[in-house]
Length: 205
Image (cartoon, rainbow, N blue to C red):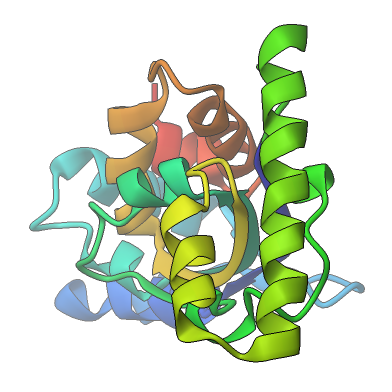
């Protein structure tokens, strides 16, 4: 299970202006804001952006200046793979260390959508036991009980992180993960496809 919300793309105008700096071709820029405040790339600017995109990383530096922020909720096993992409990405997560006992454990807090009925029963038992430990910790404040929770917590536990990255990061992520075994990566890549000019600048197939 993976969910994304509060997606925002920023700095497209400045990135495109910067893309024209090497040739001093600002007078050819034809982009504009529409009535909804969206920045629309004109024919000249989109053509330039696409040419630079296809020319390779040395030429498409402007894509590092198109920023994307989003709230991603995903299981810990997916976050371990996302953490491969450290350069150019930033993430602030909800805290497992500080807040794991702040609300009751419920099976809805875990990614169980691919589990068989038999495994789901085991997962429910585990969730019930984690809730038992949580109540015990709140009552006694015993650090050993807290460690029981932390070390028993399954990698299917869902965590939310607010992530910031750029279009160049997304080029690397999309093409490396679009055919991945984990369905969560397919969901992520589907979100990437919805970003402004994703087909022209990120997917580029």
